Amino acid sequence: MLTRADVAPARPVVSSLRTPALPRTSFKPDWLLIFAIFEILTQLALLVPGIGPARVFFRTASFAASLIMLALVQPRGRFHPAFIPAAGAMIVIGISIFHPTTNSWLSGVAQAVLYLAIFAPLVWVPGLGVTTKNLRRLLLVLWAFGLLSAVFGVLQVYFPGKFQPNLSAAIQSYGDWYVEDLKITLPSGERILRPMGLTDSPGGAASGASYAMLLGLGLFCTSRRWGMRALALLMLPTSLFCLYVCQVRVTLVVSLLSALLFVFLMGLRGELRRMLLLVAILVAVLFGSFAWATAVGGSAVTNRISSLFDEKPGNVYYSNRGHFLEDTVNVLLPKYPLGAGLGRWGMMNYYFGNNDNPDTKDIWAEIQWTGWLLDGGVPLVVFYSAALALTMWIAVRCAIDPRVGELSIWSALLASYNISLLAATFNNPIFIGQSGLEFWIINAALYCAYVNELVARRTPRMLETSDLGTARPT
Image (cartoon, rainbow, N blue to C red; front, side, top):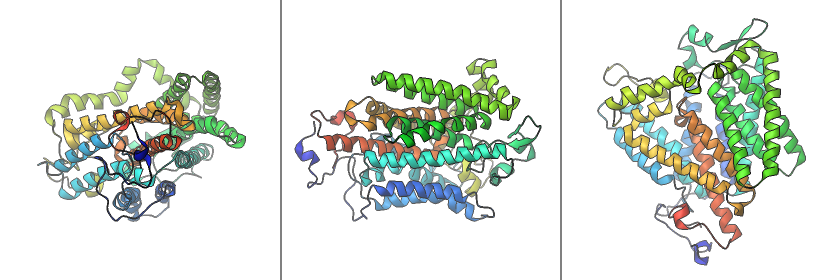
């Protein structure tokens, strides 16, 4: 049980999950928002024509910024409980650098540094002293960017070629047949790339649309301004329309399931009126936006959606991504139980790899579980799974905690978001890029805001050490 001494600001506390105090720069909570804006700007920079060699710089800028924050921000307060298994995962990654079949020293070290940058928010975000207000601002910025990407996706359908960024060089390198397979046919007969939004990948607008839909629900439930609530509500059809025409079925299904989970958590909190209102809104938006999408996209939309129901869900998944999971378990696991070495797959191999040696050449990884197995074998899979499980548990726990007010609603939404990203690991390597970095930033900020909310309220019963880890709040 926390005592008065535990929460006294004049008494610095060093816990078992904190590093010794170092002379580091003091950062305020607003730096979380600054980091998010910087991350968005680096993504937008990739869309500038003729960016050429600078593309690598902008792709890695947000990860480098995370490492800089790790070096400069003074660790303080509670670390997220996922910090312990994340540290275990980093130990495994560090050992894997010396694996005999690591692709090359350069690609191996680059992959390890990438993991460190993605996990780093678990350390530097608590050092910012994030509150519920800071978390809300962060989510508002992410919602605005996701919504803007979804709007551009809609414009790319209505005005083919006019609002479309340059296609990723990596995608073009796969050949014309691959690019052609990423197109949809409009009722007019014109073939266009799936909406890219503010990305350089066909179908990339689906990610922003998913953000916009889920966070829009959160804004509708928490905002005290009718104008903001109306905007969040009106933009839901735009987000779902974009999800339909992007034809990324996994993202569509996962987004809808996440929305339903959010509604369920609202009911679990005892907010039955809000739950029924959300159900009515989702049903109306779901069918209304589908009618809109079929009017614009025609059979390209209806055929893609109907394919989800033509067979059993398991058969649909297996024919698209399930066989990659099967190969991972049946072929790669017996061959690489302790990993295949670092730099064998993904962008680090693309940028820094050397595939001349057949024993260390690249291995195709279509889903995240394959990537984890290749990078660290069963130990990495176990540690990363434990980190994700703790993160899910914390979000749900906060969602059903009546003591933290508005934060519990955002926690319910973020619990749904976490589930969606966990499901996405069976579709693509979601945690080895920008989405993985954002995941740990958001959840570290949620946990920090949760602890600070409890301390600020001085509730009679604070969460005990066994609930939230071994470190104390400042």
